[in-house]
Image: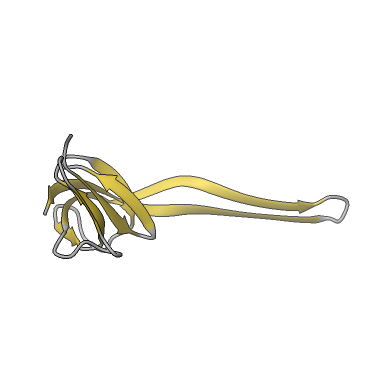
Length: 105
């Protein structure tokens, strides 16, 4: 088994491994910088799993910011009441940051 961690950022939880690239909610860090996330819910070294209550003490995940100007897919919310003339359409595109996991400590 390989080492992995479960981190919480942006109101979501992600299972990450070293070298993995993924998109998270927008961070205020420019591209090329490193970000440490201390909200680690679980850490596994391949043999032993440590669970936090709610976070694992002393554990952190180092992320490298690859791209900080990405937008997600458009989500459309459309409401309608038939025969009443009521229609409402609202769109949303979430701003995302692409990161790569450098280290799990």
